Amino acid sequence: MKKFATYTLATLMAFGMLPLMTSCSEDSLDIEQKGVTPLSIYETGNDADLMSFISGIYTRFHGDYSSSSANFGGDGSSCYNMFIYHLTRMSDEDSDGYAYNESADGMLTESDYSFFYTICYWSNMIIDRVPNNTVASTELKNRVVAEARGMRAIAMMYLVQLWGDAPLADHVMNGTEGNTPAAESWAWIEKELDEAAAALPSKSGVDGQKAIGGRLTREACLAYKGKAQLWQGNYSAAAQTLGQVIGSGLYALEENFDNLNLSASDFGPENIFEFNFDDSDEFLGGQEGSLDIYGFGSNSVMCYGVTFPLLYMNWANGSNPTQELYNFYVAHDGVESPRMNGCVMSKETFNAVTMSMNAMSFPIAINQGYFRMRNICRAEDKVGTFPQEFNKKNLVYLRYAEVLLDYAEAVCNGGSAGSISGLEALNMVRRRAGLQDAASLDMNNATYGIKAERRAELYREGVRYIDCVRWGDAKTAFANTGTATYQFGGEGEAGNYIFTSTPTGFGGWKDRYAHFPFPASDVSNNPNLNQNTGW
Image 1 (tube, rainbow, N blue to C red):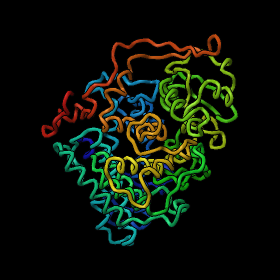
Image 2 (cartoon, rainbow, N blue to C red; image 1 turned 30 degrees about the horizontal axis):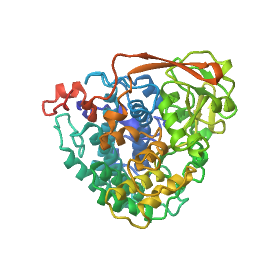
Image 3 (tube, helix red, strand yellow; image 1 turned 180 degrees about the vertical axis):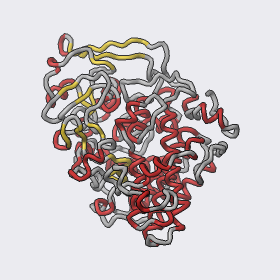
Image 4 (cartoon, rainbow, N blue to C red; image 1 turned 120 degrees about the vertical axis):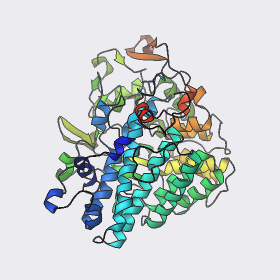
């Protein structure tokens, strides 16, 4: 972790001085002309400077998807969207199955490890230095520090979930820190989120997030705290914490699931935490490294249509569901479900919204004949001009639907219900999906169980992998992940799909993946850091 103690001043300027949640321009604050060093500006900057500092954290958290995609093998900078792609690929949701055959010095997750510690580093710079600022207003100083503490805690939550006894980043690290017991880190994460929540505002009402923008609120911190408690199996505490978010009355589900794929849902009643894109001419060029590219892939086949301006059918931003996932949706939701139609599509649906498949060249690599609808750019959300064309939709990190399902799970496992029952929370999500109410709270029921509901509702949100690991279901669920590669060959006789599979000779869940490896270089350079079991 030595790399985090040796950032250059240029890097600090690039990531720490950005207009609030909009532009990624690196010259937005001319440090040299102000005659101060980048470090002293934390203590001498005005209110506008402090807003730039916290904006830098949010912008870095979203990251540069296009740059990360080019370096996804492990030695490049990651970002939140690439992190979600990694988790999706490592589960049973994606036809680009993960091989489960890499070593600690070749893990693609090394970039994710660095990504989350980078968030901790920039947050610690604010937390350590801004309280000494004598220029900015006290109210803003307190809020910016609270937001940084919340972001640091969220980053540590992912590190502990996926790496276990990861070094606790409660300070600017120097690369000599040893493993921190997970239980100690969890207690710290909960405390940090609690204290951040106490210092942050709530939105004014169900439609009040736009006035706050893409920033953490009190309820967002509580929602993440509830997620942390759920991971630990502390269901009583999780139900109480998540019940506060529900009981606030500040959130509601979008009426139509497919609206979640559109920028029209930006700062909507369901979004608890999101990254804000600004599609005005003033900011568009400066955001080009940060907006999701609406079409991106490797050796991809392009398809144009009315609904989708450009659709790539494999890899990265265009990666597609497995046949098993499509069949799961058919069995669980039914082909008429608005949720299924907002998440995945068959060849028939694909033909209806794009040009005919007959106009495409086959075979299509890394594809089983099914395509995703979730978070694919729609024509009305395409901004910019070729070749710099982007999806202007905000990136949503946490939705109210997940809070409801977290709460239902906590109550199902013994937590006490608050303002609504756990069953009602579950059924609110099911009704929006077009499904009948569940008869009772149950974790494993194939028709209305919470596990199945989470899989259907939270597709492509990075939840499936973490859920299966914490439930102890990964060995069964991911048994066939990465055991074959696939090519889709089009339509066969009687409308049947034709896709071929080629055995890889490896793949399938390995128990050591319950905790990712610490980067081999970090373990080699730091005698205090012990590698996780099996690596």
